[in-house]
Length: 103
Image 1 (tube, rainbow, N blue to C red):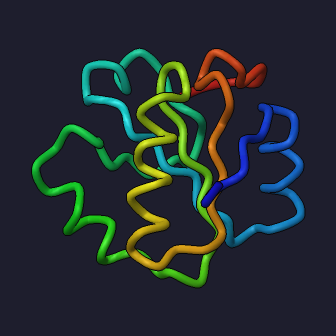
Image 2: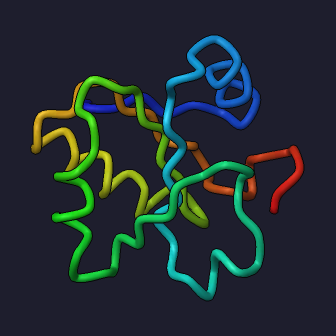
């Protein structure tokens, strides 16, 4: 597997231990408007510009991707791995498994 599934608790710990970790929300703007993890960067997987937006990211940083259920973020992790990203994490179960505040 080209990424690691993590829980909401593991994500919180990862952010504390690796402050350069980038949390990426891959849901649609409508879904994001219902709440997202604070500080998350939004890159909609369904946007035609998704590949260009990913290309602009720093491949040396760790990335944690999430969506509603974990399926789209897993697809995005696989895509990013194919583009040379090596530190990839998927929030297993999506934002529903983030037990902390949202914005």
